[in-house]
Length: 176
Image 1 (cartoon, rainbow, N blue to C red):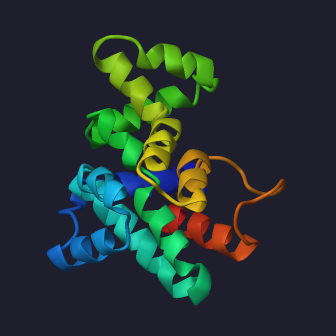
Image 2: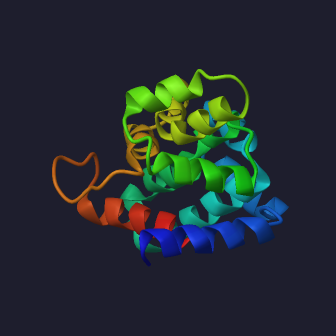
Image 3: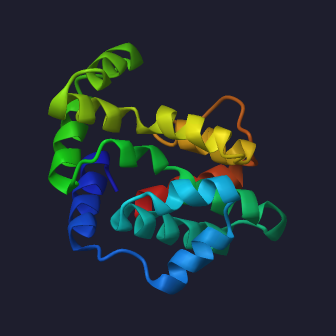
């Protein structure tokens, strides 16, 4: 699905999301470190549902020895979004702003602004903010990397996991 098509589909999924079931939430929490559990449970119900759907898809496609870290990475990759305190509409507007505010320096400056602009800037930096939190919470190297880099292209360069694991994480994030 194209970038814009993916965003439109996610917008409508998020609008209709009631959040995860208690069983799904319990499964997710059981897959995380103690420190990550606090981060995960602080996410919105819609973000937790997105993460769980992705993690379940990853669990079906990643070989057993690599599965725990891949599931963990799928579950925590969006933990930084919770700081923005934006709903679906606000996130959509922030995403559109992000198409013009590309540099991390400009995004950091926006995040320091007061009010809604600062919250939009925080949303645009959720990957780097979340990665720092996952690292402090004792997350695996893959979870920290994926949280930091899930919005970047991974066609070349060194990867912290085998290509099939990265492909599964990318596919799950695009699908859900």
